[in-house]
Image (tube, rainbow, N blue to C red; front, side, top):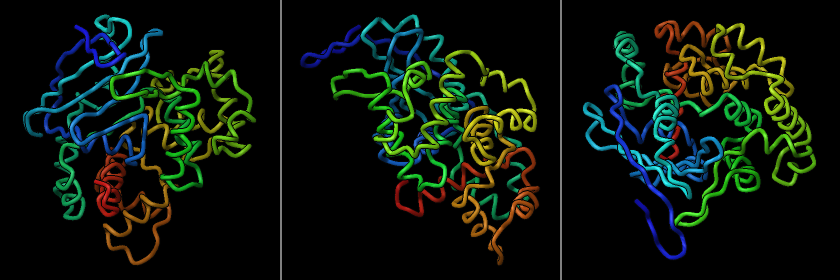
Length: 315
């Protein structure tokens, strides 16, 4: 089947997914995109859209939800210049990873019920999952870019990077861009990234990381076989990666739900407000306060992110 409008003609394939209930696509996508201006993860209030590449084939994935959080069904549509039918299996696996479709959160909700404030937070965003970037590489690039910047500025710079270096697909609605592949960024020099808003240090870190991944000098996905501490130690050896970025990659790249990126000032402040703590929370205090949700500190982090978006009027 083909979709055609004007001069744009794309091949189409579709399938359905049934997530573990409860599931809310809107909450999960907002936790992934973080800002309304994000051009890589797009949301129009109904559909989530993202450009992805499968073995050299560039596709746009469109996902909508039918049924409520208790009986969720996801309708997936693939659009590409080449017939995308062969990409169906790959996209099923990718969406399962990114959206946490098979995750059972019953233990999290049970633990939250034992703490009034955490229970209120969990119920406010019931159905959100721990969304992951499609690769640890993308999680690290997000972390490096957003270090010591507001999230709005960080997303703006990432948008520029996608437009300058990402895969482009011309759709009936206009050109859309995917997150850059490491092989593309590996061919750049740090000076090429500075006009996009990267500092010299961040540009050098990004090029170094991309070249190591492209040359198979490091296996970021292989970190999934390691425990949190071992994986964190490996990440901290990378140029430009500190504790916050390493923890962010563990959470958003490897899906380690027990990891709370304590260096996130916004999350720290929101946790302090949620718990009505009289003093600012240091690392030890954060760990102590999150003992009520063992194994799910990272999921609390995601809920606090959504709480912040609500307070800002973005969600």
